[in-house]
Length: 142
Image (cartoon, rainbow, N blue to C red; front, side, top):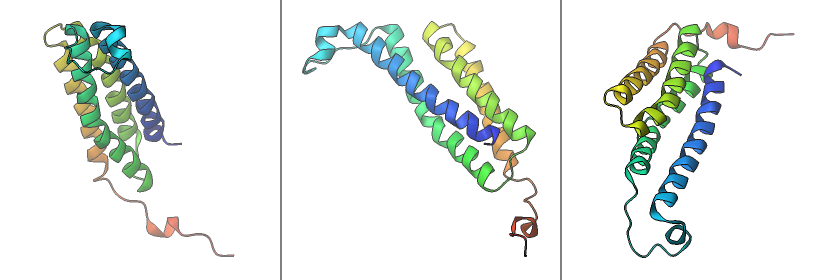
């Protein structure tokens, strides 16, 4: 498994964790009785739950691009140490993004987001690398 695919797997695990954290905080802030009921009345989450929800939607927005790059780099065999580093940077910055957004500390969330974009750009740039020699991809005769 390439490092990019390994980080894609980790990213899916992070997505699951992020959804569970967001749902739990949202339900706790709105009340368990409301969460377990028909939810006919609209209730707003508390400040931290709302931040975690916005962080989740930000993650969901950028996850497809990361997944596409991880798969494309692997399929085209254009993955390199730089693209693997980009995948690691993207993933760990996204891990940091959740608590930094939830904390509400100014600028820290933005730094985590910018760092994640640097990792994604490193992966995108890898797609413009030199493709492998097609002859090397052919099965050997005999």
